Image (tube, rainbow, N blue to C red; front, side, top):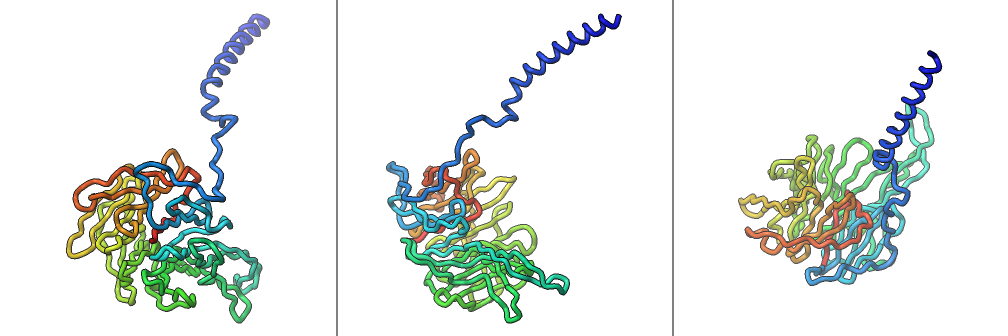
Length: 351
């Protein structure tokens, strides 16, 4: 009796083994990565030519961030401006000659904790200026200051944006107190000239063409909203947009429109809102749900933006045609080659 039972159990085990092997062959590939995964494109270290075609027409200079470095794109292609892997959030002067960006730095310092002086690893960022054609760079605003008592005071600077006349730089500054305020700095000396907010949580500054306003994203009330902050220190002006969460607005060259990203139903699309006069016309420029961070070209005829396809973010351009007057924009052209654009950094477009 025992022998028969053992034979039955052995037969059942053999059948189950065959079934498990069959299931494993079908299901296993879904959980086991392929032996030769698709490689990430190498990070460009020299000129990458633009794609060819009748619709590829990029005038001026575009600065963008790619895997921790700033790149500059012109008519021939794009090249790296930095190679440290710690630079992001570039902006560019109106004439296209100067690029400003934030660079992350680290230092072993000391801080006071519960009345005791202890070692501390400090992170901060500097505002850096460099010619778009390369050359030497200048630290315009230093995020590390050593106080008289020997302690290191650090500030996290983000999104430095130069004014249209090149005299001022709008920067978001976080000194560790839980706020991200908007501060204006002298573009030549790096000295602060005016604090435009105190105790706020602002991001993404963008100047109006006349230098009188700075458009920002405000997170002070929790959900994002767009504000226009007068550059002379007067009270900010809230903007009403299409339903959703708006962020990262930037002006058209004539100051009549703001292009911004609208997050809706976990999707991102680019809208343009008329801000001149009393009209507040709002137009969707994309509807794919995977486009964001749009900026106008210097002539207002095109838009550069980021778009994600199959998990890869690239820089695109789009001919707006008559999209702002009732028509439709033309198809978008991919300018980069899948190297992995930094999705949190907005591109900038100068002459």
